Image 1 (cartoon, chains in turn purple, blue):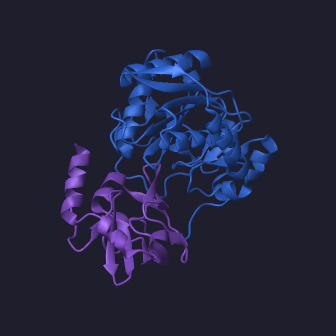
Image 2 (cartoon, one colour):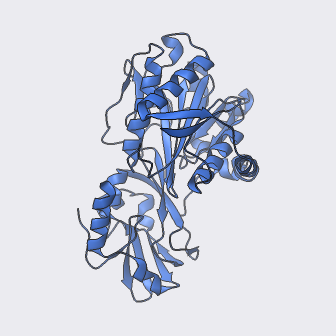
Image 3 (tube, each protein chain N blue to C red):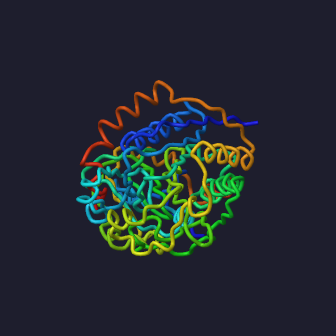
Length: 129
Length: 263
């Protein structure tokens, strides 16, 4: 399983790639594997605000709706429209073409509360018991 | 021994049924209610569609209106179900509960084991569908058209259709246990249901009343999970919440007839 070092991770299995004041957000390789084949994605509208630790969308896999939790707060400036027709991009390429949303961060200090690749990896190993 | 709450609800309409499941989900999520197993049925008969389904294309709304069948959208995934002569169960439990692994398929598998154990007390020879590798977007629009992951079949035909919602530290799984099957009505209201030979009901094998079915299933959950279920009722907060969700969400056309998506 892959956890790129240049990303920050949230305990609810989302990742952040920081570019200046903007954050690209997706779900981790571990999350997509646990979810299985994703068939639908619901994302927030451009211009809406999302709050750290709050639900900002949902995915459907295996007849289950799973909520997605925002790793940082901010205004949604872009969403991955390719996912409407190709939700499987999240499974195939979770850190690149399977990204979900881009936000303009309202409080970049929230990044300090996120995990590094190594600590996230330890966290999911402990979670599995 | 761990105590769970058992709720046996009176038959209610589709909007109330879905509102009550969500109300319990909120209170369990806030640690104000214990894990809960609820049984309910639907009056009048209703169709529930999956969260992402388009009820206008997947359900024959005109025929439903003529037959007095309500249509409601669920919080959970999956496909359309006609709730008529059936019993619905719902399980609402924290995701970190030690009885369940923190994932979708593991949860289906354990709840299915409870249901299988319960049904076996009635003498029904039920089995578990193995893990299905690929269930795509193009799956049939009716839930009972094909058995899915870890679902319950009799002689290869689907008897129980289940679906989940996960988030805010809690999962909701509910499912429909078919007691009798009116194949003609099914065909009329769910045009996507092309195959009716893949679905079955309890009455195809034995005769059982609702009370015996519920008590067998309660025993199945208690013994499989090692819990004790004590019968209780909705809390005042759950009643208030469910009234609100019914009024503001589940009885609204906007909720029931437009699928979520901003992409």
